Image (cartoon, rainbow, N blue to C red):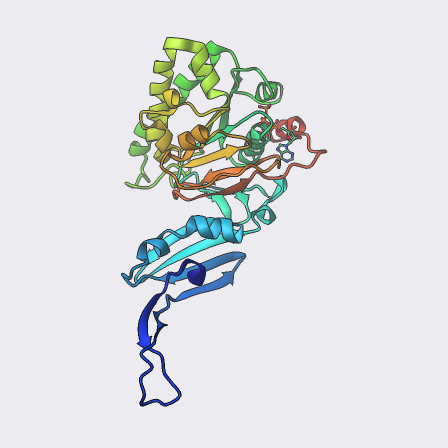
Length: 346
Ligand SMILES: Nc1ncnc2c1ncn2[C@@H]1O[C@H](COP(=O)(O)OP(=O)(O)OP(=O)(O)O)[C@@H](O)[C@H]1O
C-alpha cells in the first residue's frame, strides 16, 4: 500500500559509475524515509500500527480506515491515537463472530450480541434499531426480549401496528398496541423513572455516581417498535410523547430505565433535537438509503455501506463512534419465540 501510493520520501543521489572517482553526472532516487507499519493478529483481531512522524503523508496515515476496510475486506473495530503512532483494530471475517440465540446473555449490565461485541447498557444506555422490511428487526427485538427476560429486568412492550410483538400479550404482561394504552405506558414509565431517581437518593446505601444495580434495583426496558409510524399516526400529540421519551433517554441511565426504539426508517422529525445522540447503541439492519444511514450514524460519516443479502445483517455503532458490520444472533428455524417467552415470563 505504501509503495503503490508513493507514501515514502526520496532524495536524489548521484548514481555511481564503475570508476568511483569519475562522476557520471547522472542522478537517481533513493528512499530517504519509508514509514514504519506493523501488524499483528490477536484474538481474531488484526492490529495495524502506523508511525506518525509529522511527515508529508501524515494525513493519509491518520485516515486509513476506508482503504483498510475495503482493501482487506475487514471491519474497523476501533482506531486509537497513541504517542507517535496510530492503531487500527480490524475484525476480519465478521460473520464468523455471529453467535446463536442461546449464547445471548445479559449480565452485569451488558448484553452479548456477537463474539467480543456487547451492548453495555449500564454504561452506554438506549438502543436505536432501524431496518427495512425483512431485514431481521423483529427477530432481533424478540431475541433481546428473550435475553432480558432471563434477568430480573421488567419489560414494557409497545407495538402500534398490532403485529408480531403485540402477539406477546398472550404470554406476558405490559404489552400494548392501542394508542391510549401506549401513551399511558410511556407516561407511567417516565413517572416511575422520576420516582426512582428521587427514592434512590433516600436509600441508606446511596452513593453519588453509583447506579440502580449498585443499590440492588432491577432494570426496566421500554421496547417501542414502529416508533416513527406511531408518531405519524398521532399527529400533534407526538410532541408530548417525544418530550417524555427525551427525558427518559437523558435521565434513565442512573436509575436503570432504558429505551429500545425501533423503526423502519429513522426520521429526523422524530429523532432530531438531540434525541438520536442519546441512543448510544445504534443498529441499522437490511436495506437502507444513504439518508437513513446518515440519520442513524451522522451525516458526516465517511463509512462506505454495502448491502449483503443475509438476514439479520447490518451495521452498528455500539457507542464508540466506530461503525462496524453487525449480525444479529442466529435463530434456528425450530425456535419458537412465543413458547420460550411464555416460559420465561411465568
Ligand atoms: N437472526 C435471524 N436468524 C435466522 N433467521 C432470521 C434472522 N433474522 C431474520 N430472519 C429471517 O428473516 C425473516 C424476516 O425477519 P424479520 O421478521 O425479523 O424482519 P423484519 O425486518 O422485522 O421485517 P418486517 O418488518 O416485515 O416484519 C424471518 O422470518 C426469518 O426467516
